[in-house]
Each structure stands twice: as C-alpha cells, then as structure tokens.
Length: 197
Length: 93
Image (cartoon, rainbow over all chains, first blue to last red; front, side, top):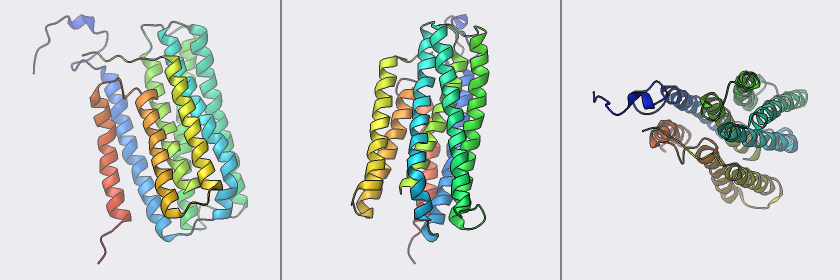
C-alpha cells in the first residue's frame, strides 16, 4: 500500500483514501438500500403484470398523496439548507431548518397513516389481493425509513441545540442529510409507479 | 483527496422549484391528460428519473463529490435494473 507522506494530520478525519471513512460507510449503506428497494420495486412490477390495480381507491388517494410528495420535497430543501446554514456558521438557521425537516417528515408519516386507514376502510387490505400486499409492503417499508430518518434528524437537532456543529464541523448533518434525501428519492419513484402509472 | 462541494442556498431553492414543477407536470399528465398509455408511461418514467437525478446530483451532492460515491450508488441501480428487466420482461418461448 502506498504510504502517504504529505501532511497526514492535515486531514481532520480517519481516512486512508482521502475520503472520510464514515462517509464511505454511509454511501455503502445507501448502495445496499438501493438493492433493497429495487428488489421490492421489481416484485411490485411483477405483481402488477398479473394483478389488477384498484384504480378507484388509488386514484382517490392521489390529491392527498400529492400533498405528501410536496411535503417530502420541501423537507429535502430544508435539510439541504440546514447543511448550508451550518457551513456558514448560522446556528439559528441550522436549528430552524432541522426542526422544519423533522416536522415535515412527521407530517408525511401522519398523512401516510391517514391514507392507509382510508384505503383499508375502502376495502384494500394487505391480505385481500396481490396488489394490496405489495402496496402495503412498499409504502410500509418506505414509511419505516421515514420514521427512522425523523429519529436521526431529531438526534442531529438535539446536538445542534447544544451547539454541537460549526462551520468546520458539520459531517453529522451531511450524513443524516444523505439518508434523508435518499428516502425522498425513493418516494419520488414510488409515487410515480404506485399512484400515477 | 479531500472532497468538498458547494452548498449554496440559491442552488437548493432552484432544485426545489424544479422538483415542484416536474411533480405538478407528472400529476397533471397522469390525472388530466388524454394521452395513450404507451406514450404516457414512458413520459412519467422519464419525469420521475429526472426528479431522482436532481435529488441525487444536487441535494446529495453527487455532482460535486468524488465519483466513487456515484459508482457506489449507480452500480447497484444498474444491477437491479437488469434484474427487473429480465424478471418483468422474460424472453418469449
């Protein structure tokens, strides 16, 4: 292995590649998540090839789910802004934008739960049809990821409230942001293939 | 090599506006247009892919970060796309 001679201590992080090892870990985790959701989406598409989609039930959900999609896009903006605020040393901006991200994410989960209740009472249950099974499986796993992301963002917000981030120390926000944006990206795909196609 | 990238609020807001416009276009096409399915489906898939690319390139900073992260992210997508293609579109007997 090539030995590094040029100021190893100039790198503030544990690394033997020049890239923060923690960030490589986050990206490898996201790569595995790509495989996870891709396999679920593949199973959904295979199911759709032979199972009928309850167009009335799913169609009536589009207005509320469109709002939910917009909220998640808004939360990606506030998450990205929180990193920008941190890099500028704006503690107030960082805290407010992180709080907005958490509230938007929690609202997304609440609306998703309301939507589940609505389609369930209209007759689409997890065990009633192949489409129903795949619908609850995909949206359920995504919802669990959103809940996990809200929890992660909450921990980052608590650290921010204690002044744990600065213009030169904000990797924790970037890592949480990468996960949050990935969750948004997955929803962008799910929204189209489940509700619009 | 230490990776850095730009985190300009104006860029994030521009991406957000783009995502909102693409989403509104998708919904309008899916619910209000009279397009045939064989035309509508590819358009919706392209719009969703464009939105996903915007998020990955600008919010996740793949455009400015080291290309290794793009490789880590895109390689499993390619594998999964191949898997889905061969499962959903089997060779006719």
